[in-house]
Length: 309
Image (cartoon, rainbow, N blue to C red; front, side):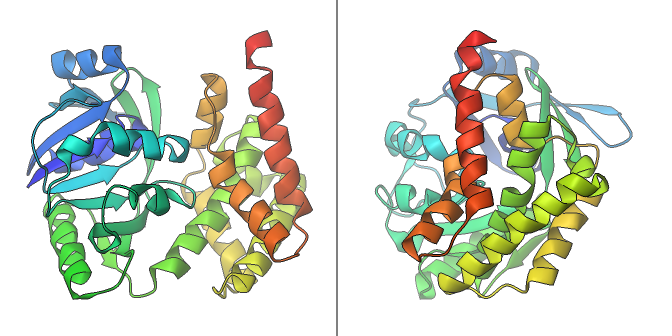
């Protein structure tokens, strides 16, 4: 397949490392030095045992016209989804499948402004990847890729199976989900419980579980999410939701949340697409979400202070 990956960050590069040996893959990014580096030197993947694997990769500046693609995978930060889709419309043919594996919620709505919903696949990735330096990333956690149609119909299900086959041929574990909204809420709860806390405390993911004070706060965040998810039409068992968060903390204990990496590099975060979604829905359903609301305020306060640091 001809595959375009929008966003050459840690996750986009990770998926390119799986897909590129089996498909024609191009990473698209708005950062010219990064694109030049990838084309000249490729990528370096660092595994758990700290072995380094050099990888050949192709990259292009966002907006470059390479013709219609069979599959476009969106990995830019949620706040940049609309802009990335707008700038890369030349990649979208009448049969192009667009798949979002981004953190947060609402990305599918931005994509739907450029692609019919029946050609959109939504999903989550259980992999964790951390950018170490330009073109070099640490694969800190593994897991399945869960996908499903944004608008269930016969043609959408065919596209989901086609995309799943491409990923599986590349060595990725894929689950096709009937109730993808349940999976999306599960992933959102995990992100809500981990990302902002890791960012505020400037700690590794595992420390959220091992520090009793942080874990107590994480519980409060997760329980708010569970109540609001149910009001939104998706039931989550709160013990199971908390267990899912603890497993991520254990499995990715040495990793850092992507939002924490944003803070280190003084970039705007995806807080509005993560805890902000829960806070806003809580307001809509008249369900208090003080912990999630406070996290949004604190992260935005940190962003405002970047210029002073």
